[in-house]
Amino acid sequence: MPTLRDIKRRIASVKSTQQITRAMKLVAAAKLRRAQERITEARPYCRTLDGMASDLARRSPRDMHPLLRGPASDGGGGTTRKLLVVITGDRGLCGAFNSNILRRSVDLLRADRGDPQVDLMLIVVGRKARDFYRRRGEVAIRSEYLNFFDKLAFAHAAQIGQDITNAYIADEVDRVQLVYNEFRSAASQRVVVKTLLPIDDAGGAEEAPGVEYLFEPSPAAILESLLPRHVEIQVYRALMESLAAEHGARMTAMDNATKNASEMIDLLTIQFNKARQERITKELLEIVSGAEALRHAGR
Image (cartoon, rainbow, N blue to C red):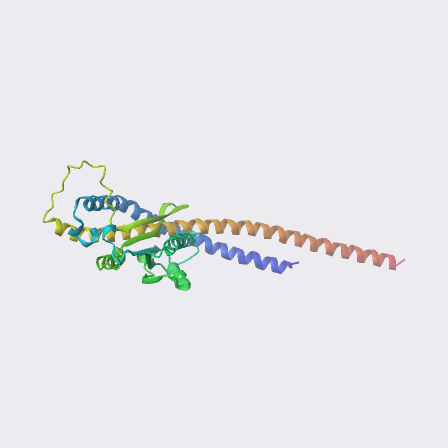
């Protein structure tokens, strides 16, 4: 049975941990507000650009730009070369945020690994994804991107987007998918698997077939500028979604940890009071027994 000193030491330890989790919750809440504002402002632009790129892919000849290359032009003797971009965080203490992404990406890889006509490659974003897939060593890692979420900027997305674009234009891959957490609320995130390349050409299918675009200066120049930027913007959106989702998950996890610490402190306090009461009762019994023994000895 633990002594009173042991219980007091444990209560002090839990209180110290509670202060840390409460501080981490406040920090995550402050970062979440900024990240939520950024992704809320960016979503309309990203959706509009995605729809425009899809409509252009539907209306433009596939040979007008390398990024318009569709599944019909897959090379490699019938083999599909697939690139999976897995986006996690650099740190833990955020509940199931990272494990949900890793579990979903492993499911995708397992489904494709059973097909001999599919070659797999990875781009990992975040230390958790890098460490996880380094340990497994089952799929080749093309690139690693770490330690930039604290100062996330468009330049980071542009670097990743250029890496993806170069691989696709060089005909090293035939399909590119993003796997990331989409921010819905502080307590809710949704794992999204988005096909980035080839560009989905179904986005403008509901529009009238007679609608035509007027290109200035020329279709080739517009596509040369727009399509690589489209890839970078969609990567940037995935990074911002993941960042906001991570802060929300960490805030929720630290809030739960703080509440659990309060419950543990209450239980330990009750245990401490019971142990102190038993000790006092035992001392009183010893005093009474000693007094009785003295009284009987004096007779």
